[in-house]
Image 1: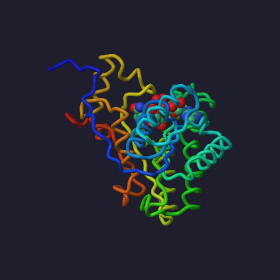
Image 2: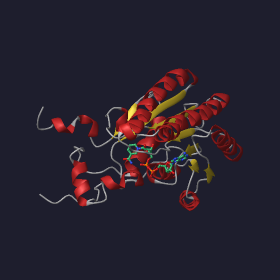
Image 3: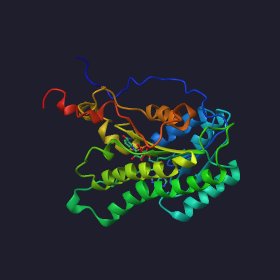
Length: 281
Ligand code: NAD
Protein backbone atom coordinates (compact mmCIF):
# COMPACT_ATOMS: atom_id res chain seq x y z
CA UNK A 1 0.00 0.00 0.00
CA UNK A 2 1.36 3.43 -0.86
CA UNK A 3 1.98 5.94 1.89
CA UNK A 4 -0.68 8.61 2.07
CA UNK A 5 0.53 11.90 0.69
CA UNK A 6 -1.06 15.27 1.19
CA UNK A 7 -1.66 15.49 -2.56
CA UNK A 8 -5.21 15.17 -3.76
CA UNK A 9 -6.50 13.19 -6.71
CA UNK A 10 -9.28 15.72 -7.24
CA UNK A 11 -10.24 16.05 -10.90
CA UNK A 12 -9.65 19.22 -12.88
CA UNK A 13 -12.93 19.81 -14.65
CA UNK A 14 -14.14 22.70 -16.78
CA UNK A 15 -17.00 24.72 -15.27
CA UNK A 16 -20.01 24.91 -17.62
CA UNK A 17 -21.28 28.41 -18.48
CA UNK A 18 -24.57 28.09 -16.62
CA UNK A 19 -24.72 31.59 -15.10
CA UNK A 20 -24.28 34.03 -17.96
CA UNK A 21 -25.55 37.49 -17.07
CA UNK A 22 -26.18 36.74 -13.39
CA UNK A 23 -24.83 38.92 -10.59
CA UNK A 24 -23.28 37.05 -7.68
CA UNK A 25 -21.82 38.00 -4.34
CA UNK A 26 -19.58 35.66 -2.36
CA UNK A 27 -18.61 36.53 1.20
CA UNK A 28 -15.15 35.71 2.45
CA UNK A 29 -14.13 35.33 -1.19
CA UNK A 30 -10.43 36.15 -0.93
CA UNK A 31 -9.43 32.79 0.55
CA UNK A 32 -10.14 29.08 0.49
CA UNK A 33 -13.61 27.89 -0.45
CA UNK A 34 -15.00 31.39 -1.04
CA UNK A 35 -12.19 32.15 -3.48
CA UNK A 36 -12.81 28.86 -5.32
CA UNK A 37 -16.56 29.52 -5.47
CA UNK A 38 -16.11 33.10 -6.70
CA UNK A 39 -13.78 31.96 -9.49
CA UNK A 40 -16.11 29.16 -10.56
CA UNK A 41 -19.15 31.48 -10.64
CA UNK A 42 -17.13 33.83 -12.84
CA UNK A 43 -16.00 30.99 -15.09
CA UNK A 44 -19.69 30.05 -15.36
CA UNK A 45 -20.40 33.56 -16.68
CA UNK A 46 -21.57 35.48 -13.60
CA UNK A 47 -20.38 38.95 -12.64
CA UNK A 48 -18.99 38.62 -9.13
CA UNK A 49 -18.56 40.75 -6.01
CA UNK A 50 -15.63 39.53 -3.93
CA UNK A 51 -16.37 40.35 -0.30
CA UNK A 52 -13.47 40.37 2.12
CA UNK A 53 -12.59 41.79 5.52
CA UNK A 54 -8.79 41.46 5.63
CA UNK A 55 -6.08 41.16 2.95
CA UNK A 56 -7.00 43.60 0.20
CA UNK A 57 -4.27 42.21 -2.09
CA UNK A 58 -5.74 38.69 -2.00
CA UNK A 59 -9.19 40.09 -2.83
CA UNK A 60 -7.73 42.09 -5.73
CA UNK A 61 -6.00 38.97 -7.05
CA UNK A 62 -9.37 37.18 -7.18
CA UNK A 63 -10.90 40.19 -8.97
CA UNK A 64 -8.06 40.13 -11.52
CA UNK A 65 -8.55 36.41 -12.15
CA UNK A 66 -12.29 36.91 -12.57
CA UNK A 67 -11.82 39.71 -15.06
CA UNK A 68 -9.62 37.39 -17.12
CA UNK A 69 -12.76 35.25 -17.63
CA UNK A 70 -14.38 38.28 -19.33
CA UNK A 71 -16.87 38.98 -16.53
CA UNK A 72 -17.25 42.03 -14.31
CA UNK A 73 -15.76 41.77 -10.85
CA UNK A 74 -15.25 44.09 -7.92
CA UNK A 75 -14.13 43.73 -4.33
CA UNK A 76 -16.06 45.16 -1.41
CA UNK A 77 -14.61 45.25 2.08
CA UNK A 78 -17.23 44.54 4.75
CA UNK A 79 -17.46 42.66 8.02
CA UNK A 80 -20.45 40.35 7.53
CA UNK A 81 -21.30 40.49 11.23
CA UNK A 82 -21.81 44.27 11.08
CA UNK A 83 -25.32 45.30 9.97
CA UNK A 84 -24.38 48.73 8.61
CA UNK A 85 -21.46 47.33 6.61
CA UNK A 86 -23.60 44.56 5.10
CA UNK A 87 -26.38 46.97 4.13
CA UNK A 88 -23.79 49.31 2.57
CA UNK A 89 -22.15 46.42 0.69
CA UNK A 90 -25.39 45.34 -0.99
CA UNK A 91 -26.21 48.98 -1.81
CA UNK A 92 -22.79 49.37 -3.45
CA UNK A 93 -23.23 46.14 -5.40
CA UNK A 94 -26.69 47.08 -6.66
CA UNK A 95 -25.44 50.52 -7.72
CA UNK A 96 -22.55 48.93 -9.62
CA UNK A 97 -24.17 45.78 -11.06
CA UNK A 98 -27.86 46.75 -11.10
CA UNK A 99 -29.09 43.85 -8.96
CA UNK A 100 -28.18 40.61 -7.16
CA UNK A 101 -29.12 37.13 -8.41
CA UNK A 102 -26.90 34.87 -6.30
CA UNK A 103 -25.61 35.10 -2.73
CA UNK A 104 -23.06 32.61 -1.46
CA UNK A 105 -22.91 33.24 2.30
CA UNK A 106 -19.54 31.67 2.88
CA UNK A 107 -17.53 33.79 5.36
CA UNK A 108 -16.69 31.87 8.48
CA UNK A 109 -14.08 31.27 11.13
CA UNK A 110 -13.19 29.19 14.14
CA UNK A 111 -12.20 30.20 17.67
CA UNK A 112 -11.58 26.80 19.23
CA UNK A 113 -11.49 26.16 22.94
CA UNK A 114 -12.25 23.54 25.54
CA UNK A 115 -15.77 24.33 26.66
CA UNK A 116 -14.92 25.24 30.26
CA UNK A 117 -12.32 27.74 29.04
CA UNK A 118 -14.34 29.23 26.18
CA UNK A 119 -14.74 32.97 26.56
CA UNK A 120 -17.89 34.85 25.70
CA UNK A 121 -15.80 36.73 23.14
CA UNK A 122 -14.89 33.44 21.41
CA UNK A 123 -18.52 32.35 21.46
CA UNK A 124 -19.86 35.68 20.19
CA UNK A 125 -17.24 36.03 17.47
CA UNK A 126 -18.08 32.69 15.89
CA UNK A 127 -21.84 33.07 16.19
CA UNK A 128 -21.58 36.68 14.98
CA UNK A 129 -19.64 35.90 11.79
CA UNK A 130 -20.86 32.39 10.95
CA UNK A 131 -24.56 32.69 11.83
CA UNK A 132 -25.54 36.36 12.23
CA UNK A 133 -23.38 37.16 9.19
CA UNK A 134 -25.43 34.76 7.09
CA UNK A 135 -28.67 36.22 8.46
CA UNK A 136 -27.63 39.78 7.59
CA UNK A 137 -26.45 38.94 4.08
CA UNK A 138 -29.44 36.70 3.32
CA UNK A 139 -31.83 39.42 4.50
CA UNK A 140 -30.35 42.00 2.12
CA UNK A 141 -30.39 39.47 -0.73
CA UNK A 142 -34.04 38.53 -0.07
CA UNK A 143 -34.99 42.22 -0.02
CA UNK A 144 -33.46 42.70 -3.47
CA UNK A 145 -34.79 39.41 -4.90
CA UNK A 146 -38.34 40.18 -3.78
CA UNK A 147 -38.15 43.78 -5.02
CA UNK A 148 -37.04 42.62 -8.50
CA UNK A 149 -38.81 39.26 -8.91
CA UNK A 150 -38.14 36.75 -11.67
CA UNK A 151 -36.44 37.89 -14.87
CA UNK A 152 -37.06 34.89 -17.16
CA UNK A 153 -34.18 35.70 -19.51
CA UNK A 154 -31.81 35.44 -16.53
CA UNK A 155 -33.16 32.60 -14.36
CA UNK A 156 -36.33 30.66 -13.50
CA UNK A 157 -35.90 31.82 -9.90
CA UNK A 158 -36.10 35.28 -8.38
CA UNK A 159 -32.80 34.62 -6.63
CA UNK A 160 -30.63 31.95 -5.13
CA UNK A 161 -28.95 31.80 -1.73
CA UNK A 162 -26.33 29.22 -0.87
CA UNK A 163 -25.39 29.00 2.80
CA UNK A 164 -21.94 27.54 3.49
CA UNK A 165 -22.58 25.15 6.32
CA UNK A 166 -20.41 22.21 7.40
CA UNK A 167 -20.63 18.54 8.22
CA UNK A 168 -20.69 19.92 11.77
CA UNK A 169 -24.32 20.91 11.32
CA UNK A 170 -24.75 17.16 11.94
CA UNK A 171 -21.53 15.88 13.54
CA UNK A 172 -20.89 17.07 17.12
CA UNK A 173 -17.39 18.50 17.58
CA UNK A 174 -15.81 18.52 21.03
CA UNK A 175 -13.60 21.55 21.57
CA UNK A 176 -15.54 23.48 18.93
CA UNK A 177 -18.96 24.00 20.55
CA UNK A 178 -19.24 27.55 19.21
CA UNK A 179 -18.47 26.48 15.63
CA UNK A 180 -20.76 23.43 15.67
CA UNK A 181 -23.55 25.55 17.17
CA UNK A 182 -23.16 28.14 14.43
CA UNK A 183 -23.42 25.47 11.75
CA UNK A 184 -26.40 23.78 13.42
CA UNK A 185 -27.98 27.23 13.47
CA UNK A 186 -27.30 27.66 9.76
CA UNK A 187 -29.27 24.46 9.07
CA UNK A 188 -32.40 25.87 10.72
CA UNK A 189 -31.84 29.37 9.32
CA UNK A 190 -31.51 27.97 5.82
CA UNK A 191 -34.52 25.63 6.07
CA UNK A 192 -36.81 28.19 7.72
CA UNK A 193 -35.87 30.85 5.20
CA UNK A 194 -36.25 28.41 2.31
CA UNK A 195 -39.77 27.58 3.46
CA UNK A 196 -40.65 31.26 3.88
CA UNK A 197 -39.42 32.57 0.55
CA UNK A 198 -40.00 29.64 -1.81
CA UNK A 199 -43.42 31.08 -2.76
CA UNK A 200 -41.52 34.17 -3.98
CA UNK A 201 -39.50 31.83 -6.27
CA UNK A 202 -36.39 32.35 -4.17
CA UNK A 203 -34.35 29.19 -3.69
CA UNK A 204 -32.32 28.79 -0.51
CA UNK A 205 -30.00 25.81 -0.06
CA UNK A 206 -26.79 24.94 1.75
CA UNK A 207 -23.56 23.15 1.07
CA UNK A 208 -22.01 21.18 3.91
CA UNK A 209 -18.33 20.67 3.13
CA UNK A 210 -16.29 17.96 4.79
CA UNK A 211 -12.54 18.40 5.07
CA UNK A 212 -11.46 20.87 2.41
CA UNK A 213 -7.86 21.99 1.90
CA UNK A 214 -7.96 25.66 3.00
CA UNK A 215 -6.20 27.88 5.54
CA UNK A 216 -8.96 27.29 8.15
CA UNK A 217 -7.75 23.73 8.83
CA UNK A 218 -4.08 23.66 7.74
CA UNK A 219 -3.09 21.57 10.75
CA UNK A 220 -5.43 18.78 9.60
CA UNK A 221 -3.72 18.20 6.24
CA UNK A 222 -0.31 19.86 6.01
CA UNK A 223 1.82 16.94 7.25
CA UNK A 224 1.66 13.29 6.08
CA UNK A 225 0.82 12.21 9.66
CA UNK A 226 -2.05 14.64 9.97
CA UNK A 227 -3.32 13.74 6.51
CA UNK A 228 -3.25 10.02 7.34
CA UNK A 229 -5.25 10.65 10.52
CA UNK A 230 -7.72 12.79 8.58
CA UNK A 231 -8.24 10.04 6.03
CA UNK A 232 -9.63 7.73 8.74
CA UNK A 233 -12.63 10.10 8.66
CA UNK A 234 -13.01 10.23 4.87
CA UNK A 235 -14.23 7.01 3.18
CA UNK A 236 -13.47 8.39 -0.29
CA UNK A 237 -9.79 8.59 0.64
CA UNK A 238 -8.82 12.09 -0.37
CA UNK A 239 -9.12 15.58 1.00
CA UNK A 240 -11.59 17.90 -0.68
CA UNK A 241 -10.42 20.87 -2.71
CA UNK A 242 -12.18 24.25 -2.97
CA UNK A 243 -13.06 23.30 -6.57
CA UNK A 244 -15.15 20.36 -5.27
CA UNK A 245 -17.32 22.85 -3.38
CA UNK A 246 -17.21 25.40 -6.19
CA UNK A 247 -18.72 23.04 -8.76
CA UNK A 248 -21.55 22.19 -6.35
CA UNK A 249 -22.15 25.91 -5.80
CA UNK A 250 -22.38 26.60 -9.55
CA UNK A 251 -24.96 23.83 -9.91
CA UNK A 252 -27.02 25.01 -6.93
CA UNK A 253 -26.92 28.59 -8.24
CA UNK A 254 -28.03 27.56 -11.73
CA UNK A 255 -31.40 26.61 -13.20
CA UNK A 256 -30.05 23.04 -13.47
CA UNK A 257 -31.10 22.70 -9.81
CA UNK A 258 -34.35 24.67 -10.16
CA UNK A 259 -36.47 22.22 -8.12
CA UNK A 260 -33.91 21.97 -5.29
CA UNK A 261 -35.25 23.99 -2.35
CA UNK A 262 -34.19 23.87 1.29
CA UNK A 263 -31.64 21.11 0.81
CA UNK A 264 -28.21 20.70 2.31
CA UNK A 265 -25.83 19.15 -0.19
CA UNK A 266 -23.08 17.29 1.67
CA UNK A 267 -19.82 17.46 -0.27
CA UNK A 268 -17.69 15.48 2.12
CA UNK A 269 -16.20 12.33 0.57
CA UNK A 270 -18.51 10.33 2.83
CA UNK A 271 -17.49 11.91 6.14
CA UNK A 272 -21.10 11.85 7.37
CA UNK A 273 -21.38 8.08 6.73
CA UNK A 274 -20.05 7.19 10.21
CA UNK A 275 -16.75 5.78 8.84
CA UNK A 276 -15.96 4.27 12.26
CA UNK A 277 -18.71 1.74 11.55
CA UNK A 278 -17.12 0.53 8.30
CA UNK A 279 -15.38 -2.33 10.09
CA UNK A 280 -17.28 -2.56 13.34
CA UNK A 281 -20.41 -1.57 15.18
P1 NAD B 1 -10.79 30.41 5.03
O1 NAD B 1 -10.27 30.84 6.35
O2 NAD B 1 -9.85 30.17 3.92
O3 NAD B 1 -11.89 31.42 4.51
C1 NAD B 1 -12.79 32.10 5.35
C2 NAD B 1 -13.04 33.46 4.77
O4 NAD B 1 -13.99 34.17 5.59
C3 NAD B 1 -11.77 34.32 4.72
O5 NAD B 1 -11.73 35.02 3.51
C4 NAD B 1 -11.99 35.28 5.89
O6 NAD B 1 -11.27 36.48 5.78
C5 NAD B 1 -13.48 35.47 5.78
N1 NAD B 1 -14.06 36.11 6.96
C6 NAD B 1 -13.83 35.83 8.26
N2 NAD B 1 -14.51 36.68 9.03
C7 NAD B 1 -15.17 37.54 8.20
C8 NAD B 1 -16.04 38.63 8.39
N3 NAD B 1 -16.35 39.05 9.63
N4 NAD B 1 -16.53 39.27 7.32
C9 NAD B 1 -16.22 38.86 6.06
N5 NAD B 1 -15.40 37.82 5.82
C10 NAD B 1 -14.89 37.18 6.88
O7 NAD B 1 -11.63 29.09 5.34
P2 NAD B 1 -12.56 28.20 4.39
O8 NAD B 1 -12.28 26.81 4.72
O9 NAD B 1 -12.48 28.64 2.99
O10 NAD B 1 -13.99 28.54 5.01
C11 NAD B 1 -15.06 29.03 4.23
C12 NAD B 1 -16.37 28.51 4.79
O11 NAD B 1 -16.42 27.09 4.64
C13 NAD B 1 -16.58 28.78 6.29
O12 NAD B 1 -17.93 29.13 6.53
C14 NAD B 1 -16.24 27.45 6.92
O13 NAD B 1 -16.89 27.26 8.16
C15 NAD B 1 -16.78 26.50 5.86
N6 NAD B 1 -16.24 25.14 5.94
C16 NAD B 1 -14.92 24.89 5.68
C17 NAD B 1 -14.47 23.57 5.76
C18 NAD B 1 -13.04 23.19 5.46
O14 NAD B 1 -12.67 22.02 5.67
N7 NAD B 1 -12.18 24.09 4.98
C19 NAD B 1 -15.33 22.55 6.12
C20 NAD B 1 -16.65 22.86 6.40
C21 NAD B 1 -17.10 24.16 6.29
